[in-house]
Amino acid sequence: MFARLFTWWNGSTIGAMYDIKRRSDFVGEDAYGNRYFEDRKVSIEGRKRRYVIYKGLAEPSKVPAEWHGWLHHTFKNPPTVEPLKRQDWETDHKPNMTGTLFADVPQGSLRDSGQRSANSADYEAWTPDA
Image 1: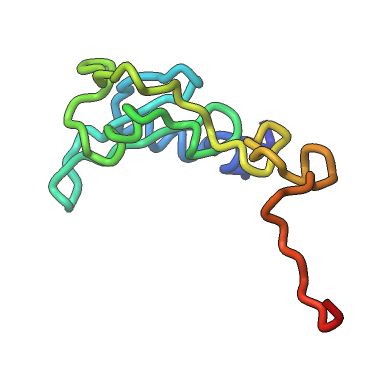
Image 2: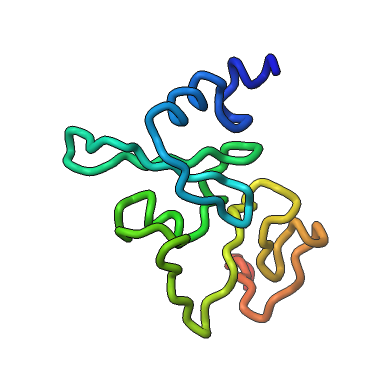
């Protein structure tokens, strides 16, 4: 409970939750448990503000593409009303895993084995004796 009072990176603070729930309507929830809200009133910019309350760590890369488009006013209707049409070649959304043990590692990376394998295109330094 103490962490919810003062830390914004562990979800949202109690003050933010109160304020968002007081002036916004719940729109939907994604597969990661993130909850999305939209203001009831139009802001100065002429459109309603939209919010996401993250489940757990506040990591923006956990927002799927369809919700990202709705948050940034690319799509008028949320995915709960008008689902985003997926193409055959599209893959499922993955959060950014950079800096974790689950990060993608390119083939031949030193992180894999600690030793770089020999390559036919390796550079051979020039020496005056040759």
